[in-house]
Length: 467
Ligand SMILES: [Zn+2]
Image (cartoon, rainbow, N blue to C red; front, side, top):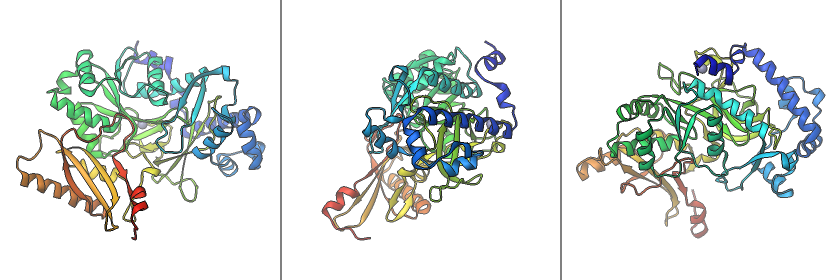
């Protein structure tokens, strides 16, 4: 199938060439339609709108919508589910019309949300992802390796479904260990594969161990599709050099019901080395980025909390869901492609609840990641924060070194660990004890990254801590 016929079949090229204000006008029409739908049929939103005095006929602009309709979050959804298990009153459809159910990972400790989708919802979700495939240079028939786990979480199952919908030949390799995945890659020469950034680092390290050279052994590779973690520009450049292709990134959530933001042809880095833009699919999801304190929309270039409203979900609809994902809002013009969709910066999506408070200082794990991984010798690391017997807060960073790059002498190794510690101090203002861990002794991640263990809560039960 030629690129033009793929474009005609799976995308809406007219949408991509609209003016930005026309896209926003279309989005508002779809938003009003969705609001009317939930107000007419969904008990959860009927009650929410009633208790907050929301009058739909008074919503004539996005600003009206933002001022009238309250934010909901995971706690709101969990309360509703507990009152009416398993889907809550927000299900909004006959149970027999459910096409698939997804649950959230539950890593927040607040429980797992249940999200139903109708068959039509799943179709709409798939049609969104086609943009990413096409923009990334993929065509129907291309071989794609999928490393995300296929279970009840939406990432793997929906990812596979949408790729099949676009006509990709999907190799579901999540169940195999990393060596086996790479063996299969060498055998079938994929055009693309999907990996979380942390897992891409792991794949690269194992490639080296196996004597595999992607530029030679994976000659058909066009791109690597990543999602699920922040990373530094240096890391993206290293990966591009190692794999010989650009990285493309997407952002989505179980709540929005789809992968909603994608980098375009430029990938995650522009030619001049700036971070790329993930364009939001404005006709499927309304994305707001708000200041987490004031809840007011942030200005272009600022960071804030991503608020998502699905414009298509009939089952378990989601209106103004607060994700607690920290994103940087960028206007469409940030990207040279000329598409009319605003979006968010690639490589900087993280979780507000991942922020570590170390000795009273707010510290983002990605700041530490960027410092530690700027040393090419480092393969993986794990951080631990705890309260010592003296009642002081201690931070230990254990690093695993790549066997091929580990300094030959103990002294040189010690100097390297000290250099990492010095850079961490420079970037975070905090003293951290950096130690070496044996190779392959630290956890590896295929999807959700958890490099930090916080033992302060349990420690504080036994010692008195004063700061
Ligand atoms: Zn673009």
